Image (cartoon, rainbow, N blue to C red; front, top):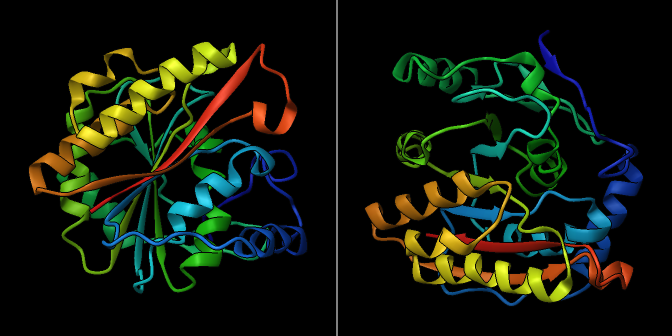
Length: 258
């Protein structure tokens, strides 16, 4: 069976199911304020769980309906290419067991979008993989589709998203971290531009934002505007909160759209 192996287990998140579940137990011990609408899409960070896991969990916790399809969009950090790569696997592995892929949807998207490729090397990607244990734990019956993008017009990602959100009980996951390796003061300024863009759903405000998943954020905002969705930023933190180092921080945000 064609299976996507874990590439960053033991680095970004534990490689043992017991340890992964300990993280979820810890995050669930702190009440998460619930918003007044159900997300159709969530925006979550993808750093190590000790840095950004709690921030990401606040978005996952907002989804209280049954989810059958999850489509994960993440930027490529290791392989440079144009366009996007879809993982044509039958399943993806997590420390707590495999998640079945939506082979029918994947093949349909390749037919619908001939520019959508399958680049095997692009799928040892942490921006998407860090989300897999969350999906396994939070949406136990869901099928998964992994889309890793390189240099791309965000409108192309929006086109894929528009088709996917028409499927019943479907959730889009847009994976991104924010600014990287600025002082805390500089990071806050850059990250606030990203946060304000999501709050207002104005693409123009992304001009001063820095994020590795910028194209995914922009695609999500374009989708929200096209479908008349609302947005809510749930949490913002930086690596400083864990390390105490203000000299080179990374920013993290979670948000919902729907």
